[in-house]
Image 1 (cartoon, rainbow, N blue to C red):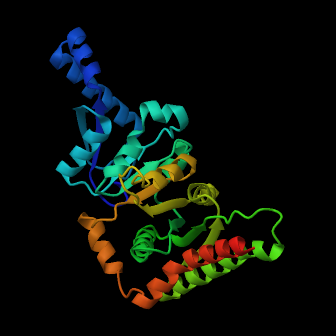
Image 2 (image 1 turned 45 degrees about the horizontal axis):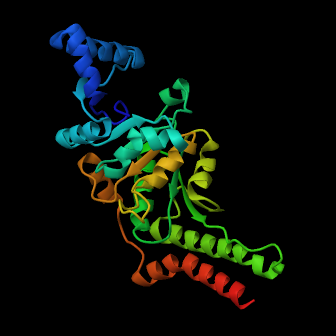
Image 3 (image 1 turned 90 degrees about the vertical axis):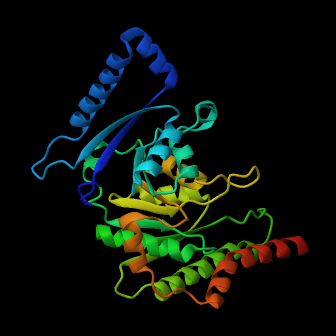
Length: 315
């Protein structure tokens, strides 16, 4: 990424404070710090071998404390344009006890976060991002989804890739004994969602833009992850949710996609993005849908879902 955008690169390693205390007691304070920095330099040299085009400017940084807190603190202090980090894809009981640094960063990040799932091999990762051919942009047809679609298109333009706008519908749970006419409501929902997506595509973008649409039915994270099986894909999605007790935590959907996806996930904060990315995004933002269009498209899925439930109750 640094080579592609001609940017500098800072490699950060965060140590556990207890480990630091034990290490200093055994090796001595300065000796332990020097050894840690030397190991980080050796790792970077092995992970990023020199190439004919050269390596980007690389700075090494060692910090002590909570990994997520330190990552966010240094990102703010250095005014970085992008955080790039891997994920071990913890789930279930392991995640309950140990948590996930990636998910914690997604909850509070104020800059874009590019998360790399553990399923990506070194060969595929070496070709990223120059071989990204498709940007997958999940949109919910509500709220500020127009800016989500435009930002995904901006990133696709930078990578010379096509855009796939995806909307995932929640399945309508109907008992098997209901008439087939009632179960056909899901087909109508899909048709209406397809119409809304196509209408959004033609309204927001020109016919020359390589943008396609798709509607899926199911759990959002799983359905989005299934689309990443094609090589050369990149998922671009906004960080949503709240930190409240009853609401979905911010970054939860993005992290769930990451744990199932086979391609990188670029998570964008909803607030204004700074740096060069902001300038490029502003240039891409043009005319938006009228207020009437926004209301109609945002309400399609909700109205159809309510209508389906009412028919079931009357029956």
